[in-house]
Amino acid sequence: MRRVRELANGDVIVPLSELDRNARTNVANLLVQGLDQTSMRVASTMPMPYFPPIKEGNERSKDYSRTRRKAMLSIWDTNKMDIKMRRRARHLLAYSSAPVIIKPDFKTLVPKWSVRNPLDTYPAASEDPDNLVPDDCIFTYTKSAQWLIDHYGEQIVGKLRMGRITFDSRFTLLEYVDDQEIVICVIGAQVTTEMQPVERAGVETIELERIPNRTGMPLTVIPQRISLDTPRGQYDGVLGMYFTRARLQALTEIAIERGIFPDEYLVARPGENPEIIQMAEGKTGQLGVVKGGDIQQLQTNPGYKTDTALDRLERQERLEGAIPAEFGGESSVRRPAVMLELAEHYTVCLYMPLE
Image (cartoon, rainbow, N blue to C red):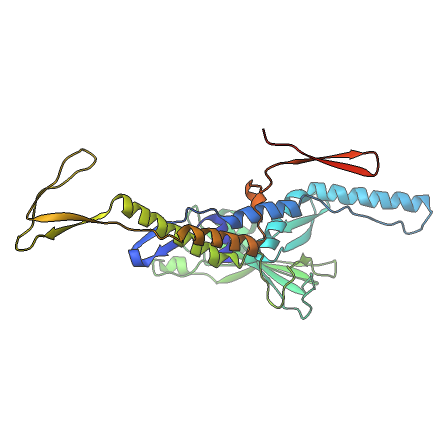
């Protein structure tokens, strides 16, 4: 999951140890194209809630069912469900998991959907791989020191190990959820050698809240992609191909650069001692002067199959991640077809040239 996140964020570096340099990648990131396009297509259509009437043919029962549907649509609108579906679609495709927790909001009196990061979600193991609701789950997230003091000042000040507090100090919170209760605790600052004895004082963990779960069922839903035995994202197989393609492209650019500025060697003539009297400067037109030797250039050939290998790797990435060329704004169709329906049984296809 972390490797997929680094590649999606562009935080990867292609190591070139044999040339003693690190080159930034400058090839098309097909993972981002496939992830954005596929997730937008997944979330482009919202499901339609349906509440059947309890009593068929009863007008009051039909009115109640319509009221339930309107209430559910209103709850979705309050939670901005369309945006949450887009984020969950990205989580499902990239991380093979899309966790969400549903809790009551006592200010608006409606259920509140909270999308959680799969990297910080730890559900309980289940024997049924198709079980979307784990028996219990632990979530981790961070909060600033100011937020902790504002909400739980009396519980943590003078008790929790706060360390050296700065403007960017953040503390890790653990949230445990099951069918009986919700427990939130905070972890103190990590002990370092730079801390003073006063800063090291305090307990390591403090329980902040313990709320009873009156629903009697877990509030966490964690759908996963269907796989054989272990969770696997749609683009996990693209990582190795991307690094190989980026590394090959970087090596090709280095070879091209060396071809523009080739390595020069001073070769002595038989029985003479070579000497460079004046260095050549091509940009200013200055000629070089050599005594007793010849200047020879070593040309570097990038390789006659480099372009073929790059194209082959790109095709393999598209096949592995199901990323068609249309996702990047490309199309293999040169002549668009216009379909005209005539009457009820005839269809004519007119091929119009681009001119």
